[in-house]
Length: 112
Image 1 (tube, one colour):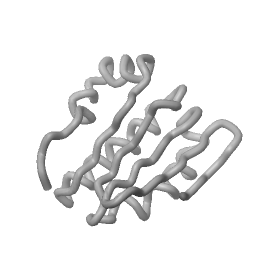
Image 2 (cartoon, rainbow, N blue to C red; image 1 turned 180 degrees about the vertical axis):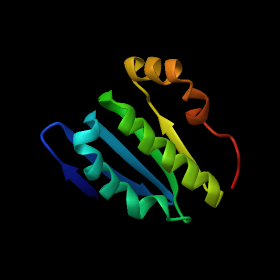
Image 3 (cartoon, rainbow, N blue to C red; image 1 turned 90 degrees about the horizontal axis):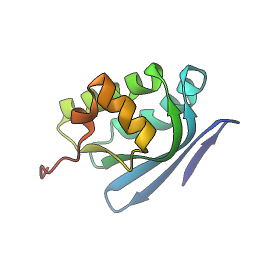
């Protein structure tokens, strides 16, 4: 288990089989973006893992956080490996809907 903590943001990773789930807790904004990138960097390029971001405990995300999620999506798509976002809280889902990015984070039913 990998842990990265700041006062307002925490990322925890759990790997089971070939699925790595990253749980985001707290507030993901510009001030903690370097911490989030540090956690994600080794995972994004690992084509042997299906990558899942769990937002159940994320209270806030700004445009920087959304940009990082989109860059992960683009990188994973380019490598033709699975990436999904799950358990999106209602207030963050509303933001995803308003910005038009919800469709990119919808559960994927493809079999890689």
